[in-house]
Image 1 (cartoon, one colour):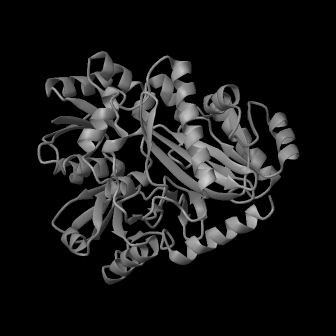
Image 2: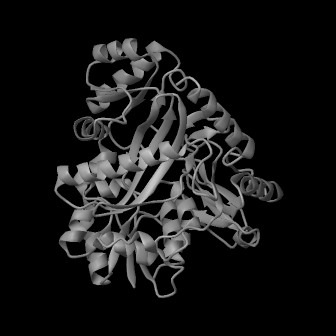
Length: 441
């Protein structure tokens, strides 16, 4: 089957590896830049700006692809799915109107308020600093979010990245000046979890629960990033999420899909990712992604125990069969290696050495992100998340330790990573913390 893929990041390399595990797959890729991991798998690879959809459509039309998978969120917001479907090309991804669920946080909160009626923390969308101050006085600690896409790097939490009331108001004022409006949310306390699902015409098939590590450094220190890594358990659950809370999250996702299809008048065919937090008062929706999360996509593609070509085609054509979706009964851990300055700019690309064959011999999956391979073991880190390492095993702690030990034996001084992703002690601490929070209910 001829499959189109849009994107050139780590998420897309993970998707490409899964698609090409089927020997009959021919992959055609439209990308903004080079990704050697994807290029080695592709039958044709075209670099083109994502803001020029006609070039992308011509590329896929000329190669007569059977369907297309869209990776990055920015392309979805530009309406590439609408364009592809108008040409008769089935596509995995929401329409432009549906993509507002991620691309417009104010739209998302209003949809939940008007159509769902539950699941949101207290929030305010405002263009007034005075209104923002009154909201702060009412709810206390808040989270400040730009309304549009920020790659996970624009969200700041009062008392963490924002030192005090004045620092918070200064950031709010800056966002109002640049964007015209800002979203403020009550800072809810608990543990986050990621629930992703394949969605096609109101049929939802959830994937194993995962937890993403968003901050730059161990112990959730530093600035927010696009995600430094994630883990999942062999049973598909997380120890600090109760069965009732998990069922509640799945009901919530189903209700949102129904509401979004009603609002936009179109079937939702793609991925839906809910970032939830378990709190003292139940689960709360932190944000939505309308595509596979990154890094969670690295974990998903590693544990998916069926042919992604078949499943993705079912999603794109409205024929998703839950019985065809299966996952291995193993835990997964993904860790991103990044330049030492990340998420700050690095200036010039950073050269480093790594033998990818040694990674494979250690039983690990190497995912190419923002990186250029310049020789057999020579690489250039280009500034964002450079390489992903993914492992499978009995439990996340075992896999996390395996990755750490590999990087101790094969150090890359120019890059760093979070050792606490999937760490057994960290997971146990999270479970203990949630027990304490629940005891206050």
